[in-house]
Image (tube, rainbow, N blue to C red):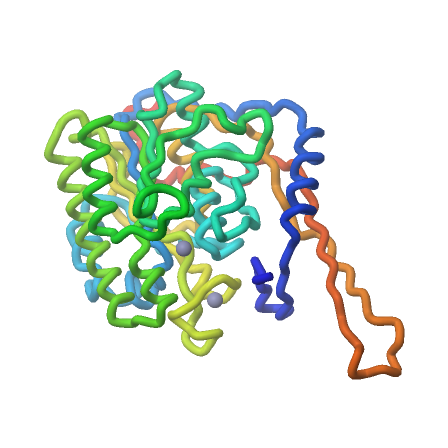
Length: 370
Ligand SMILES: [Zn+2]
Ligand SMILES: [Zn+2]
C-alpha cells in the first residue's frame, strides 16, 4: 500500500487500512454532538458569485518565485487588480485530495488520494446550498481530475448525500480519467453561462499531471496555459451579467512540489518539505483591497473567507481524523536477524475539534461592512 503521508523530519511513512479507517470514522461520528454554528454573517458584501481555481501542484519556483516568467497574466494585470498572499501554505497533507478537501471544508485531514474516500466534513458547497435553499445547479465542481468528484460529499452521517453540488469531472465523470485543461475551461464557461452558479471550484491538472509523468516541458507549458486560462476566465466573468462586478475569483494551488534534490524534486510531492508546503493565493473581487498581504494563512482559511463573502455559516465544531499513535512491534526472535521485521501499527483517531480555519480579514476593503 502506498503511504499517504511521509514525515520528512522523522522519515516515517504512514499507511492505513481502509476498513479500519472507515470503521473508526463511523463510530466516532456517531458520538458527534450537534454542532453549534459560527456566525460569520456579514452585511453589505457585493460578492454574489465565487469561483475558486486550483492550479494543481504548481511549485513556487516555477510560478510566483520567478515572475513574470511563466505567469505574466497572473503576476501582471491580475495581481494589480487584487490581493496577493505570498505566505500561503498547505502545512498539512500535501496531496491533491487532502489539499482540495482543506480548501472546501476548512479542515486538514489525511484522505485517500485515489478518489475512494469522502472528506470528513461538509464542504462550503453543502453549507451554501443548505442555507440558501438553492438547487444543486447553483454550486459546481468542474475538474480536470475525475477523482475530485469526492469533493461533492462527506462521510459525516448528518450531511452525507445532502445538499451536494453538481459535478463535471474528468473525461466523462468519475473513473473516466483526466481531462485536458483546455476542455475544462470550456466546460467551466459553459456551466457558468448556462446555470449561473454562485459557487464553483475549478481544478486544472496539467502542471501536476505532466510533472508526475516526468515531462518537464509540458509541466511548464501547463503552468503557462493555466495562467492564460485564469485570465480568460476573469475576462469572461467581467464581460457579462450577472457576474460582472459581483464575482470574486480565488486562485491557489493545492500543494507545491518537492524542492530540487528531494525525492525526485519537481516531479513529485507529498511530504512536508518547503517546496511541497508553499502555496499562494491571488484574490480578486469587489470586496477585496488591492496589494500584498504579508500575514501567514493556509488553505483551510479559504472556506471561512468564502462563507463571509456569500453570507453563510460553517459549523464551529468539525471532525478531524488524526494520526495519533504509532506502535512499533518488533519481531520477538532477535537472534534471527535475517527474519527480523519491524511492523508499525498506526492508529487513526477520529476527534472533534473547534474549526481552526479563520477568515482572511486583511483581504476585505472594509467598504460596506457593518
Ligand atoms: Zn494536486
Ligand atoms: Zn516535498
